[in-house]
Image 1 (cartoon, helix red, strand yellow):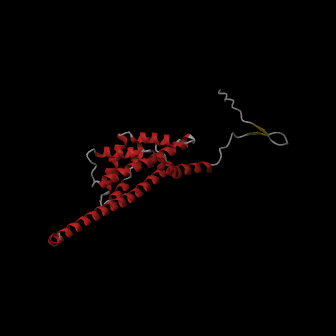
Image 2: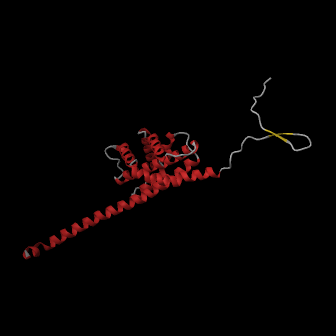
Image 3: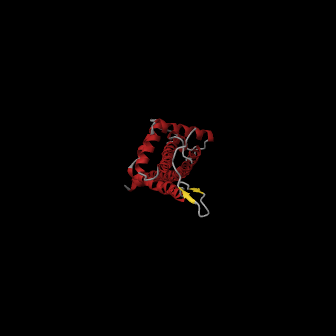
Length: 234
């Protein structure tokens, strides 16, 4: 045994060093991947809540437009930069449009709005509830799109065998899980719904019907309530 160690000791040492280096490399890759994912999700969250605020202030005329509003080309570019990919504004726009169309074609915009509306169960005036649901759905779709792009860049700019639709559908199924959806909605209530409620509370009260004042005698004017008698057309 001693003779064997003397003869092959250097080779065994080299193999051991190579094995340790390989393990360290794998650990480093894993740590780097986690760091990139955290930084990418920070970008996704930022664009999601910014978009939600914009939609809450200026609601879109239709749900179909949410797919376009939710996928921001600059978000795509910034996620790519984290993964060491430099792309032009035009490339980012093309990717964003492609994913936006996929959201619409899979029915995930209307499906997401229905899911969010049911899960939130808002007890609010119709107009306010509509604003809140649209804004929160927009943020949720941005999150869905962002995670899909992270998967794309993680795989060296490859959508995989199932293409973009399979990646988006997988992320949709993951995001609608009870625990993930609950966490998202808790943050949405604080960031979107509560500010909308405060805006409504700050509005001045609506005035009732104005009183008609008839001139009386020398005393105080006589107040006469308005009548709903229809006008007599001649």
